[in-house]
Image (cartoon, rainbow, N blue to C red; front, side, top):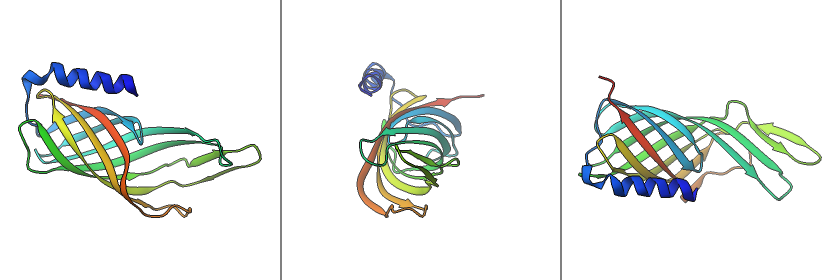
Length: 171
């Protein structure tokens, strides 16, 4: 995690001389670390709106009776960018997380599974290091689980994530 953060900071500092706004009507590919690490692809349909999907994997080793968990998730998302600045762009994000397989629990005595689906709403900021590279950080503010587990609706600052986006010019 420290290495990824250091790389993102280095890319931001070295590219500071080529600041630009987020391009519109471009394919976006990227990677994220944090709550749900993984890769994503999207399309910026305008200078203020981006649609995409992320494929993520979470592996949690727990030292309690629940054992270790592994989630493979598909997460369609939408980002709405507010009044855009020269290089920093604040946004709101809504992300639907879907675990099509299930969430698996491995304990010494039992193994059970259940769906792990829900909606996360959050906010973040993206720094456009160059005209084609954006570095971002975001937090979730509301978590609305859809599964029939003991999870409750959560409010607050949670699930921080950082990432990088490449805006591809396919012309």
